[in-house]
Image 1 (cartoon, rainbow, N blue to C red):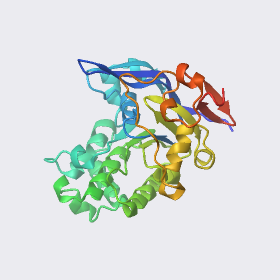
Image 2: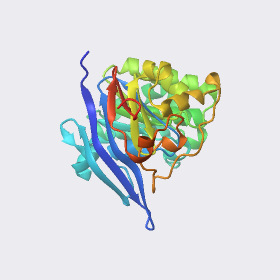
Image 3: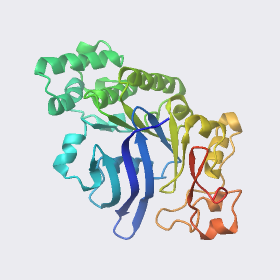
Image 4: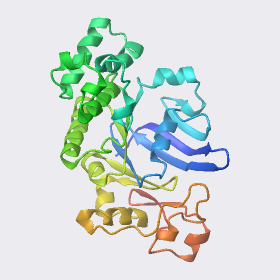
Length: 316
């Protein structure tokens, strides 16, 4: 089957200058997001997942340097002006931040905040915007929607604030939705509700692609078509979701799955290496049960094994 890419990342590097040192937060990422798919970007906290997502939309702080290419709709976003990015953000590509408690403006009504992207990026008139805002609140089960639209974030529960952010992100019918850790701080019953919500979004918006940034493997399994694994600033495996959960190739992917309670709760030995001075060769080799001499000295190339892209000397 042939797939069409919606967004393509080529050799993306992100460095963050902390004054006394430089953090290599993304190091040579190559990945594509296909039309009409949910791609899960997974890995331990601190692996660079959120930085990669922010780099797509050029939302990184001024001390960040970005090199490489991010192709979307015929344009390299890395080279796009701030004016061009303002036309894309919220309309073509929407971002759902990971912390609903701090991402909504506390002094503005929630309905106003949900409607703002529509005011900026659509031709809907004031009444149409109001009706769609109420419809979105109803769709995401924020009841009663007419009253809730006039309330402030402090009057919402944590789950309602989260759903309001998702309503805001989908309000302009974007082509790509980037959701950053949507289950962070969410208990198990509510995770199932969030997963159901994303499935419903996908059903109602069949052309939508979603980049799901998460370290929650069960959440990714419930939603994703493909999985991209990130470790210490690098993409190390890209594979169909079913393949990842049944027969992952990279030793780090194996270790992530073995750390699940249902698979033995085996702790991954060691710690995530420093992004300031990462280990030579394969970055996972200090923690890897299969490490060979070449793993310590040479960076592994990518290999394609039965549709899986994997960066490991075992397959080179």
